[in-house]
Length: 202
Image 1 (cartoon, rainbow, N blue to C red):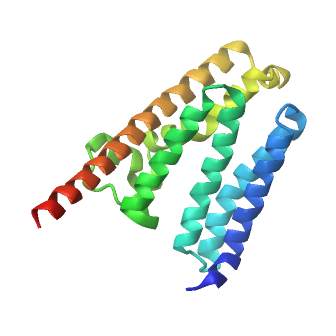
Image 2 (cartoon, helix red, strand yellow):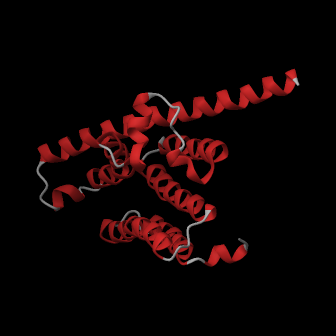
Image 3 (cartoon, rainbow, N blue to C red):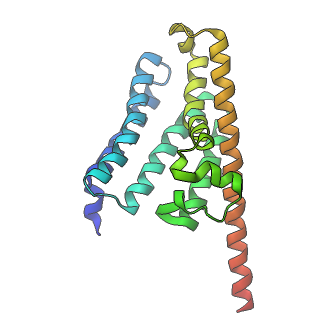
């Protein structure tokens, strides 16, 4: 494979998603514009993977780009929502670096030797109850908070109790995600320090 991989259809979708994130950033204070643009980027997140498999255009670059754009979008949203949002974004980027540096493009299926609770989240590409809860918290929590902050949920006639319930469920998922992120970072640090010890012995 060469640079032509950059022109694979799913990767072009990824570039378009990144552009949508930039547009969403520009219209952040206008929910009627922000939500459709950001939502389209999220919908295309599922399309690029399907397209890659359908057209047999899967690639390491595509797997990397997909997560980069995801982090790009969530990082923008967290940072715009709160002054401390950059901390969440930094944690997600740190986890991304640790996983892709140690595990490569197949990082989702490389947790066979991790603790049981981590495997429960990661199993079947997050297609388990803990995995679904984690992904919902990861992607849905900042969007839900945006809806609360800009009073969008009330405009959609979502009752207060349901807004609170949604917040609690997504918060639980995000906390579970946080636990997995911390485990990944610590595992990567252990991996790095182990390599250094072995090099010194050699």
